Length: 319
Image (tube, rainbow, N blue to C red; front, side, top):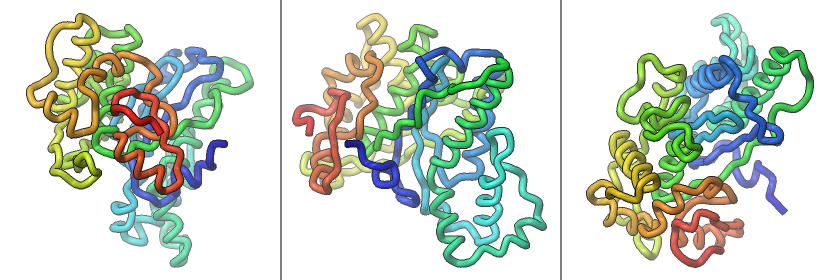
């Protein structure tokens, strides 16, 4: 039995998550005029309010992918007044986006110590964003179509990304979504996808505001075979873009090579070099419960968590 989200993805806890939400019956309900623009603009607005980083995204015709990092450390540094302003914004959602809070409302909010503590936790979690976005978008689409009914298949899926290898593989996987779907031959030309923004924001792109809010995980720790810290990979937007482009070329033609150093880096990340291209060319692999190396998953299993992995990227020993 799947554990409650409050246990899988605790409010106020740091972590990296792959979030996926699909349209009902996999229908292309995001494909209509202005619909993905609506989503991109409002996601950008939410990332301006929450202590949540956007690491990757792909807004497809019938589903969305987000890779996010929750940042309770950032929320802890905000002043009480700033926490109050942001919390009131997410409590006054307007058309799927955080509301605008008048200064007078902030001054008279009167949030106590416990309320502020709870607000900091809420602001460092994507749950309120996903709920408001999905509800607002469903109402908007139904108004456009003069219809009623569900737009989204179910609640969003959350997959824990538990180490550097998992984060690297998941970000590239999300950036390859339009390519894998056959919509583009070059990931850099992907619409409504973070791949197009890795080497600099496209000033004319319809998702420009969301692309401007991408974060890069620099200095993410790498673990050795026993799960101990063993240096870090100082990845950049250009690094991710180069690997994504090279991987797409290998999937499409079987020719070329990954950027220099990847053959040495992938094993250190717990990733099978032989399975990298094959796995990144398959849809649906970054689902399940967690994404990460066998060593990291084994550690989770010791804590009583279900640590299965569907990717095939991280060697033997699926738990």
